Image (tube, rainbow, N blue to C red; front, side, top):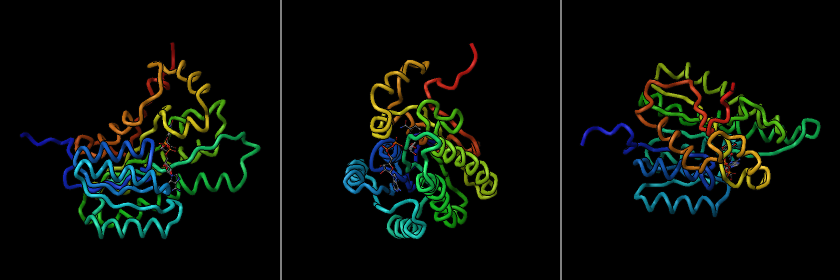
Length: 257
Ligand SMILES: NC(=O)c1ccc[n+]([C@@H]2O[C@H](COP(=O)([O-])OP(=O)(O)OC[C@H]3O[C@@H](n4cnc5c(N)ncnc54)[C@H](O)[C@@H]3O)[C@@H](O)[C@H]2O)c1
């Protein structure tokens, strides 16, 4: 068979927030393409379900329940995962939280939690995998941002979330330049609305149905539709792409008539 550059055989992928939602989708799609997986989520039962799904595909798994905002715990996750699986080649910074509040009601604690998980968490997961990636001169880092990094949240009012996701886009570009000499590619994925627990719990079905009328494709994404973009950016198919952002959003950001 010809060399299939979509395959990830022999690679190890660390997916934060992979207990449910999109993170579970990323873990399963990357495993389907041959990668062993570091399943990482504070939700232990949900993480166990992802572990079972990945094992069913015949892949090796390491599991962590660390909080991504705890720098020491993140470093330990990376060290233990590397001891168990040998290496980490792909990092998907996916763990995230949502919170909808008007600007005046966002407390310092709300703000710090938002940045601690999305920005600090992603930053130190990246730092923890860097030595091995540099040594092997190969790495793929995918930061999950959001369409709201570009558009703001509008009626949903989540300016601290939007700011944290926009910070991830800046981080993506800075790392892409700094790490290009080591053949480490860093890109961002900014999904539009994706049907997971997060919007179902926080926005509710009425809002979801209302918003899908404004999406040219007329619906929200299924989690795995974002995972296919992640898998592309994790594979050799994207070897000349770095510092970029792809937004699977059903056409939501098309402007003009
Ligand atoms: N669903 C959407 O419409 C949408 C759109 C754009 C971007 N996103 C982003 O995509 C990512 C995945 O979102 P989702 O919709 O699958 O949400 P989700 O709530 O279903 O999944 C997020 C996962 O991250 C885990 N997590 C949260 N905080 C953590 C922490 N401190 N340490 C470790 N794990 C933690 C959660 O336990 C959960 O399993 C998030 O970064 C989110 O902001 C979601």
